[in-house]
Length: 206
Image (cartoon, helix red, strand yellow):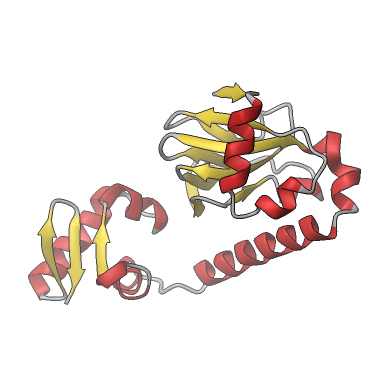
């Protein structure tokens, strides 16, 4: 992790942000944080409560159950918020966010600016929108088909561009299964004529 306080770089990233109008009007001490792939962006062990906006790269958000197993909650790319729940509630003891690739976030300390944030209607509207989207996604996850084959077919049909699955590892993470399980389902579906293989890690729904 690397923190960047260069004012010109910060201004440049804010200017390119989807939320630049709100960020520009806020009296906040912003800085940038750069993460390498695999680094934890948010975890229960961090001392500081940070609000972060993904500006480059992507993240995986997951929960660690009491038995030690990992359960995928969401993925996030550009414009994704981290720390929106922490503005209102204590930090969760088992939710983690991990950089899926090189990542740059616009960041600030929540506690330092909390009172000002509560008085900023534009910012609160953004937070409400973000939390509503996360609730909608988790609700949809709870209603997905039960068998892995059904989940794979539904994912390819409704979530993939051109009904084409790209990337076994990332898709397996999203579908809460192992890469081996997903590959087995894809092989069986290909043999049954439901999907066709386009290349390494690429399958299209027929």
